[in-house]
Length: 287
Image 1 (tube, rainbow, N blue to C red):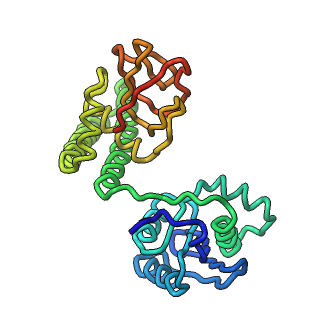
Image 2 (cartoon, rainbow, N blue to C red; image 1 turned 120 degrees about the vertical axis):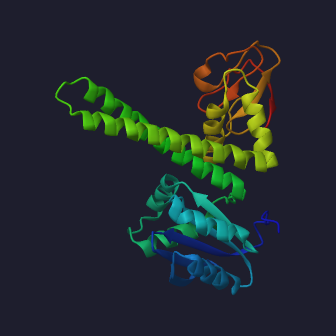
């Protein structure tokens, strides 16, 4: 199934305002609103929405705002459906577009704004990552959360040990909490590494990352999970997305993060956070 539709093929334009429990849907065709409906934000509701769009017997374009876990399953279902393109939009972009229409702020009005965005604006279809990539992203996010929690508990232990008034049971409990967090993070990293080894694409990207001096397994896991979360493109002219391995032909080193030099000549890691120095021509290996 090809998702690269011709602009003239799209005859149905749909906007979906996503909430935790419901989907407010506005469907337009031939410059007029056809239907305003509400579906459950569940597997059955997603199937009902897809069936409703297929009844129109045309290529449908669906726009929705990125709302994290609430919109992810819907975007995956729409992307997998035949003759449906889906765009997952930055809420700030949608808000600016809505301001030009001067509409009220309700779920149905938001759905209408999104439908008109599908019809009027250049459409960039969202592409779903593979299932292993999604799982790795989720594991990476959970490890990040545990890392923050571990730092918080470590600071609490340091403060508790600095006072003679702290009971010993509190110090022991904090130590047990830290040990538990370390075990949980280690187990999740093992699961992430096993997942990477089971997927050829992830395995190749991971191997390229750890081949860079200064990037070990833990850092590579974080980078790979971040790359799956944010596929921004580097502005150095190479056009590769976040976390691309870079070899420079005219300079001994390049690194996009803050324009700092990398650890070793001829290598670097592009995080898309700043502009590469323009006089460095980069040959990139996509990971």
